[in-house]
Length: 269
Image (cartoon, rainbow, N blue to C red; front, top):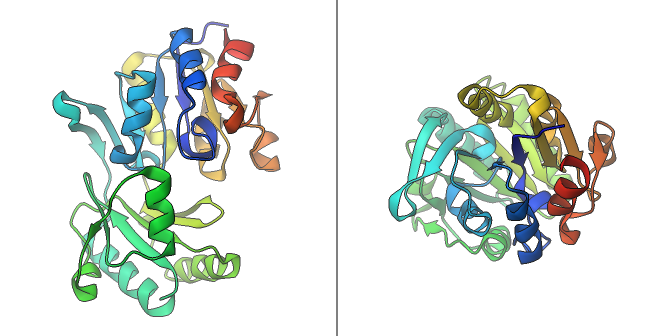
């Protein structure tokens, strides 16, 4: 096989349990010399350290495919394609979630900022994981009005029942223009319906005139399925869910054991 491009999830895949790229992992990936695109639910600001560690130059995919971008001068985010949520929908969701689930950590993202109105356990957890500081809006009323060009609404709860009830509530709103996804045990995220990891990959495949057999991807979660199903060689982490492992070409080591770097050299080179 000749693999010309690799697509890679971040949390639970490229990043270790502390939310960082092991230097040994980064070295293996750089050494392979195959172009890599990160495909993540994260915001660009939360992807920057990994992009720098891997010395990536090409297009990257954020917000589960809601944003395709490159890094310009002075680390500036240069959008190639953007799919935001309508502001009226953002307001409806924020107000409904806060009214019915006040115990759930609630925040949202535009292109360059992460917004919340209080530092609760969920915000603190995310802040420790990504090492990013949120923009705090002091007024709850103003916070619930949302921001134009919102890419993602994020909810965090460490109570599984709360997350399940919240997901049922959001589904009951029948908002056809959004997608609701679990991106981790404690995370529920809302993006535009067309914000899918497969959209970002399709863009890069067209631009680089790649065929399926020339591509591989690494992932671990349910939001990785569209990505894993559309490329030639889906490689799944040892720490992934069993139903994700079922569609794998190969299963590599875990995210704490340099699974991406190992998998590239073991199965793709």
